[in-house]
Amino acid sequence: MIDTGGSHYIGAFDSGVPGGSYYIQIFRQLGTAPADGDTLVSSRQILWTGSGELTATKILANPAVMDKVTGQIDYYDDDGQTILFTVTPCDTEASLIRMVD
Image (cartoon, rainbow, N blue to C red; front, top):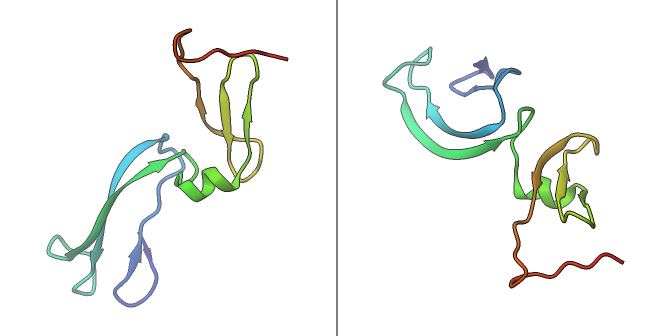
């Protein structure tokens, strides 16, 4: 945790935390130091990429590149180099016909 002054603390993910789905909790510090009795203010699930939180804004604001042959889509991070995740479609002849021109 990083002390930001007053009764607010900010937690940070260590650089070694792998990408995945994590549940975070935010507490209001009641005393001079964090304690088990602090009040829970909020909690939520986040998708961690290994270097930052994956949000809808990040997905929509950054490039996505689709391979025309396989249909695989790579979604990139802010740097335009790091692939955040890849979607590979699973299709059948009955549901989708893909043609390459």
